[in-house]
Length: 314
Image (cartoon, rainbow, N blue to C red; front, top):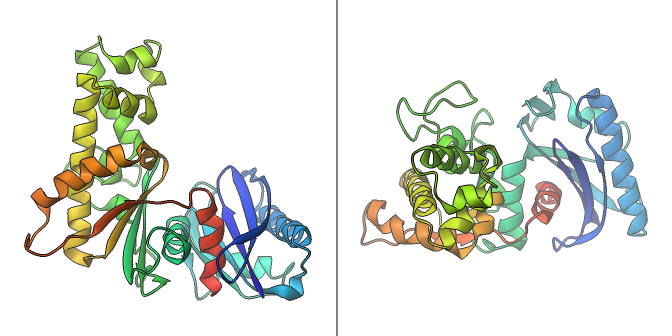
């Protein structure tokens, strides 16, 4: 038997046929075109699933279950998408709608959770009984794994680490609160801090790489300039690494996982980022005689969404 994994994003719908061992056997994808009614998107998911099965020379009869990773919050018992702001969804009966086309068990979870599950099953945290994945992108997502299963809490909010308060009365967040972790630990945060620094110190490598236009600054530019030793970029990067280390200390204090996994676009900075945070963690971690969590980089990349979604039904 095989599993279907669906990675539902704001731009693309990616679907894969996944083996019992967590290998992707075949894939199909299409544009999300999120402004359409949810019924159209669900039909596209089903069509992509059937195309991927055909590529693998399999049929619906070979499928054990379907898993879907969504950029939002789900009620797993009812098969509902509670809300998904990128798609404009609220209380969408995703499981019932998909089963109109493929009548198999359907499991739904947040995209960060399924990425964490993928890493725990077939990636860097394989073998860990407890782990947390932080997706460092435009925002910050989190996925908590306990004994091989995602943990979403009593109301589906478990793992929303991006909206823990890191700085009281800090930078306003899109969620309506102030000082949220993702305002300081995301790619967006790096850009904001760099733009602010460049106002006072315009002669720097960041602006040079951005063609002199602060609006063209992105996280990669800042990190590349920091790697080259530019003083302004180093200040921004050091501030970012300190905030991330503080966030990891908070996670460690209440959960104490075996491993923290860094994923998302900012994690492409690789060991330059990981080593900077590793160096800071001993300063903050309590009970210093005890080991802290291992800090590692995610390794499955874009495949994590499909593999993790598929493994929801395992």
